[in-house]
Image 1 (cartoon, one colour):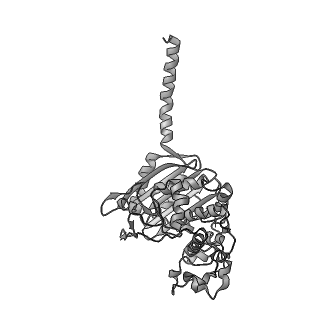
Image 2 (cartoon, rainbow, N blue to C red):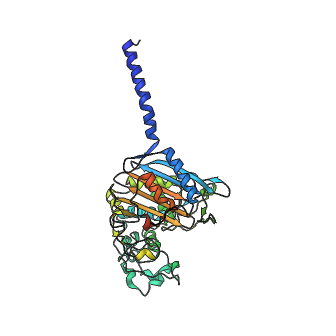
Length: 396
């Protein structure tokens, strides 16, 4: 039987619980940005649809990471506008060059196991001159192929173009000397895939399942189209709202064939941030600056125009990831672009915070600058270099 004093203490404790509980709930309904300020989930869910409407973005999914864990996942808008089908956290979306980050993670596992040396000439793994391979006969008259390494492929310093079919004659050739400078190249990643498959005796599809997707529980991710995607996948849309025919890729390509969901890719980002599957040494090697990027833009005619615009953030490239410095410590990022698709991801290692954005619209990159600032407090991502020009931007 309780005494009057015990009852008084119980009543006081209960009162304190009632006072603390609302604050605790409010805490759970907010996201902490890099500078310690907070944004409420309700504010996020008002802001994002309003921005999407302004920029004419039909569908957008995002994930926010705190303490190296997935903290918030939400999909907005439509995966199929014509059928009014909603975009969902489990909707399969084209990952584009997010594919490269996953491949880099896989490659670094081989490096830490001693299966692959980042600086050994790649042709030495093949047992024959590179031009003897069908896809590399164009290089027969240029012996610089002997210099190519895995590090060059991952840092985009092979000297190859992004894709050979962008060339007037669609032939593969060096645009720059290997190792001379950064020049974004899917071709470099594709060559590294050939080597990785040769030395492991396994295709990328099998390797990615064994080393990445299954261990991390990424059940709706693959480098090729899967029947399981049929019941819930997104269609891409161009700037004018025209639908892009869905490409269901049947060939695994390290540089850009992956299909994933916002849920799965956020899981992957969390794994990278936690160094899951990688030793601390391998993780650090992957996300440290290996080459500086002193150019005005990542793509197009400004990609070789030198500038000091990003000198303050020390813009550079690691192994499969872009990197920069901020007052909150180093950050690493990866984006993905194609007609009808825009994706971006960034992690601030010291603050254990990150953001992943995926969209089925070519207009979505016009929102990335504001989303990074409002949701994460990231005002450091080089949006002009990325060509993330806001929908309402006017140069002063």
